[in-house]
Length: 170
Length: 368
Image (tube, rainbow over all chains, first blue to last red; front, side, top):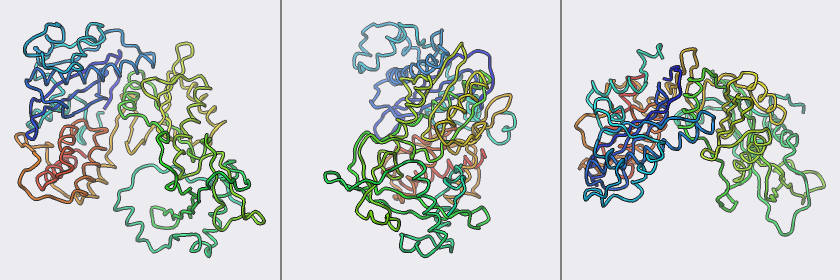
């Protein structure tokens, strides 16, 4: 599950599925963290608030991911493996990244709860950097929705889950 | 009666038993007494009770005092259990003296923090990167090591009342099993110990301790009575073990290989964490041992909702299944989504939900 690598660099993925809960139209958040090989921290959770747009859903997820990233960074700093560079978190939604980079008060964001603007502050400190990635490369996809067999198996391999047939290699 | 050193406490139990296994064990013909009267006739049980008392005395757990006027005393109770070998023969007559903790008043500061699974996986991931090995120590009867802050008096155990001291009671210095303060008292004790030995506690994770000396790091993670130790130098780990031996009775389990039901396989190329054994037991428990395997956890277009029109199912069954699945997510992020989805329907489990949950079991079967 975990392989050996030279540098210790924390890397995260953050993704959401908008309004997928048919009971209350809330969205699902998912995030994943790794040091380069093998993912050691993950979460899949229904959001607390009803997101009115995909951007908001992504933004809420990003806030949760950033929180977790900060916690992991703290632990690493405490273990004397301080992360010098900002932790890169891959996000698909470019609008969500734009909002977190640019504190413009936009009509589409005015209803966001204050606590979800947390990523902005953290980004300013350069502790965490939100970076865009393509949906295909978004590994946290597996934590937000049911996938096709092909996609599911592809992602499962990428996040380092071994199944019996390949167990010997791990 | 003379009792050997190693009989004071049993060897640490590794692994999990499923409920069915537990029930099966209850069906064994050997008789387990329910109370002292039933046990008093069997010399095996009497010997085991004496051994337990001897250990309590050796541990300096209590002292005999006059009954206090202003304090309540708590009763104690014998608990009897037969431990069997894998072949069904009797391994040991096991007796524990427990405090009737249920009569204690409920409070808030009785809990001991445990490590988050994230932290444990983080530690494993980090040690892989650093090419460190993770070692595991187990503290014998950890809870009995904790010093108590409160004054607690217990009655003398049934059948072993000291002659001529009928009305005396024991004042506890250390915790006994069943005492609500026991986990917390143990945590305080080990916390003190580690801080005294120069460790620093992480403010964001109360079970993670680190000691840095000339760029060499030694990390200790607590999980109640299990300690995970890793660090940049093997000698440091060995040194720490010696320090632990001085203060506690510990079992050195060597390389971390089996922790919380997870199998940990450490090789030169990396570390593998898995729960095959637990997964197999779950399949057995839900009679899914010979089910058909399936390659995904959930149908791609399937939507689950609260009221899907299908009949309700036994919620206890559903809840216990989800509980098992949640534990499996400790090493399997691939089922995390579906498990968290299914756990939203704990209070309104329907046939469709149960079917989906069983589908996850079929998926797990395919990955074993």
